[in-house]
Image 1 (cartoon, helix red, strand yellow):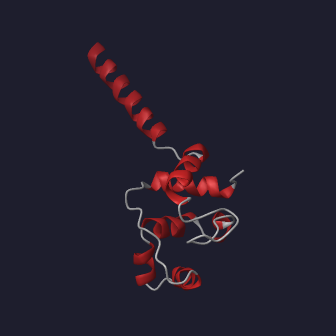
Image 2: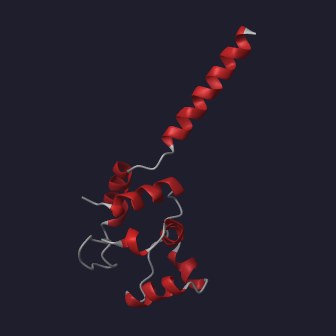
Image 3: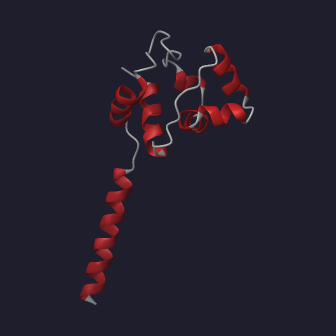
Amino acid sequence: MFYQKLFSTIVLSLCCLVVTAQKASVEEGKKLYKSKCTSCHAMDKKLVGPPLKGTAQKYDLAWFTKWVRSSSALIKSGDKKAVALFNANNKIPMTDNKDLSSTQIQSIYLFLQNPN
């Protein structure tokens, strides 16, 4: 009985740690933005890609996640917003980010909601 309760407590604690570790955060988003996005994007001016200020207000998280993960797949699917964005930026495809988890992309999105 003692070992069963101990085991249950350990499993519950580990589950809580995993959930906490996977929670999106503005701080993580800022870090990821700096490491993944700034080579092509600025907040207020066009570089290779468009400025990212206001992105979270223009696009919902589900669409943003698809775009960041693979803009070329979204364009090929015929998504009107994706095609328009691609055309407006000299038809230069954004690099795929299939290595980013949904939580990491959500963190970037949270940062873009209020980048100050």
